[in-house]
Structure formats: structure tokens, C-alpha cells
Image 1 (tube, rainbow, N blue to C red):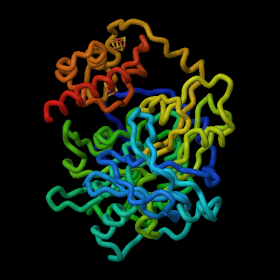
Image 2 (cartoon, rainbow, N blue to C red):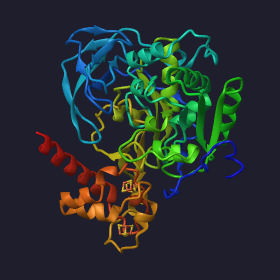
Image 3 (cartoon, protein in one colour):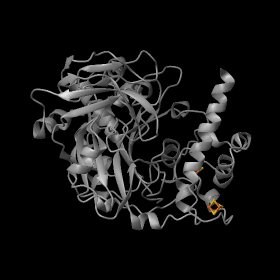
Image 4 (cartoon, rainbow, N blue to C red):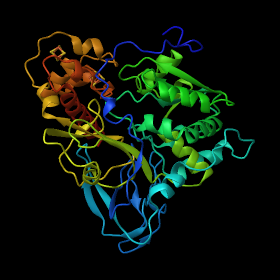
Length: 457
Ligand code: SF4
Ligand code: SF4
């Protein structure tokens, strides 16, 4: 690793963490297919971390592809745009995979839709310059990202304009573009790096201008050599560096990436910007390039449908708001031994059963596990082996947190810093007793948050 990591302060890895089976083989070699335009989409009014949007359209109103349909005046929010042309239907309520109920705008497709290669060209095609001579100020770029409703496509769904901004009080010296994709099974970022590297490079250059970062580093795990070679080639002629990191989970988590590349610690309760760093995912940065150069909002994203439980695993370019069920059907449906459906990957994903739910901006994939996968996960009693403690990237005591949550002991959960848990899933993965640690800890976090909210009211 020393040689590979020459030129960076970090060691290309971080303490603790795990090495889960990668399982990328299901979809890594499948080129991105453009999903045919759906007949309907459903747009939840909350698709970002932060405040929900409010609808600005009325039932029976016609909307065009790319038109704003919902916005918010809150600082931490991101507007929502129509991914198809059509007619707005009566507002409804949908459930998200994390069990939140949110209002949603249904749109029924009407008229001609952008599809196939035309849609691909609209999203990823065209000219992507690598140099700008003052055409865009940091303020211009920030405003265009805000107008485009872009959020972090790596799963966090944090509004991008809040991150990619110039802040005189907290200057940013380094921009890390995250192409690690450490979550097992999922491959959308890998395919974007292979099939649309130009907008990734252009987006990185533009985000560098917007933040004022002097160093731009695209970070890729060692297990993606084809993406490393291509991104290096495409970055020639720019000041962008490529960092090749050790393959380890959760390497793609912001604070662990910053430690691995820059050897900087982001203290609990602080943000990367507090240590002069901004981290943005490769798919997000490609959307930034499109928003700035084509003035187009975030309406589509790449998702992976994968695992032993789906007949034909694929990477798909899809409109936001299409249902999970439609993607599963497009991939040939479930295999006879499919047992569990996850929104996201097995480490940070959520199990769900309602296939009518819509895909949101932060959804990177659908993982379909088999009965054999589940068989390996039968629960027994804790054997006090301490393995969960050894792997926790946040230096917590997962067994204690899970116990506190199980017995609804909110004080104990707080005492052991449950809110510092980043849902990495490392503890649940390593636990030989197969205790559902992550689910219990998520429940405990919700209890602590509810208690704190009550205290404030
Ligand atoms: S306690 Fe949270 S952060 Fe620590 S390993 Fe478990 S899920 Fe990950
Ligand atoms: S890894 Fe599992 S069995 Fe071992 S101490 Fe943690 S909870 Fe208990």
C-alpha cells in the first residue's frame, strides 16, 4: 500500500472496518441500459436529508420533462423536477423503505418522452470541457447546483449545493470525489466511471472552482482497476489526482475516506468542511457537470438491480419516481429462491415488501437476497466475543447499544453514544451469533431522537 499511496498523507485505509464478500460480479460487467419511459412516476416530497419540499403543481396540470414540481425555502433541502412529461394527478402518500410516510406527487406520462440513446445523450452525452477560463464563478455554479435539485447520489442524499460552496470562514483546501463504492453488490458508480468518465472529470473541475479547493482527488478502491485506468487517462491535462485505496468497508464513508487519504480526523459532531474538505460522490459530480453546462436538473440516476434473487441483474439509467416493482420486472422478475428485497446494499440497505414504492434520488440499487443468503443469518445468543467492537469504524460498543435498544433503556443508549453510529452494518456482518445489531441500533437511535425532540417541545 505504501507505494500505491505515494503522494498522499493518509495510508490508503483506516483503522477497523471489515472485508465483506464483494459480490459485485452479478452486475459489474453489465453496461448501463436505459429503462423505457414508464407510464407513471411517483415523486415523494422528501428525497433529501433535511426539510421536505412543498408541491407547486396542481392536479390535472401538465408538466414538461425537467420542470420544477416541488421546492422548499429551507436551507437543507433540494427541489424536485418532473422526470417525464405528463399530467399531475392527485397528491398521495407513499412509504419509503426506511418506513417514513411522506406526501408524493403522481405524474401520468403523456405525449412524447425522451428515451433510449436520446435520453442517454441528454444525461451523459455531448462535450465535457476540462478547462474553464472564468466562464463560471463559484456563486454561479452553486446556484445552478441548487436550481438542479442535486443531492448526494451515494446514498446520503445531502443537498449538494450546501456542500459545494465557497465559504470564506471555512476555506476548503481539498475536494475528494468518492468512487470507492464499498457497499457489496452495488455497481452504479463503477459503471458511471467506466461509461461516463468525461462528466465526472468536468464535474470535479467545476466543483473545484465552486469550493476553491486547490487539490482535487478522485478516490477509487483497488478492486476497480478498469475504472482507475480510465479515470486516470481522462484526468490527463487537469490538476486532478487519482488515489487508489485499499478495498475495505466502509471506505466510502466520508470520515473514513478523509482519514484514509488525508490522515485528518473529522471529530464527532463536525463536518468534513470543518477540516477543510468536501467529499462528493462520482455520480453526484456528473450531475453537477450536467446542471452547469446543460442547465438540466436531476431527474434520472443509475441504479443496480442485483443479487442471486433476480433473474437478470442489470445497471439501469432510470427516471426518479419509477417503482421498485417496475425495475424488478424489467430485470426478468425474482428467481424461485429469492427471499429478501433490500433498498440499497446488504450493509446499509433497508428490507421492504411493497414493490409499489418509488425509487428516490438517494437509491443506488436493489439487492435481492436468496434463501441461502438468509440461512447464513440465523440468530443465536451473544457469545461475548467482542468482534463487533473490534470492527466498529466509529469505535462504539455495538453489543451494548443493541442491548440498550432491545430493553428500551434510552439513558444507557445515550451513555454509549448511540447517535454516533453511522449505520455501517460492520457489527451485524461480523457477529457470529447473527444478532440483528443494526436493526436494534437503528431502533435505539429513533428512541433517543424521540426523547430529545420531546425535551425540546
Ligand atoms: S455500531 Fe453502528 S457504526 Fe458501529 S459497526 Fe455497528 S452499525 Fe457500524
Ligand atoms: S459480535 Fe455478536 S456475539 Fe460477539 S459480542 Fe458482539 S453481539 Fe455478541
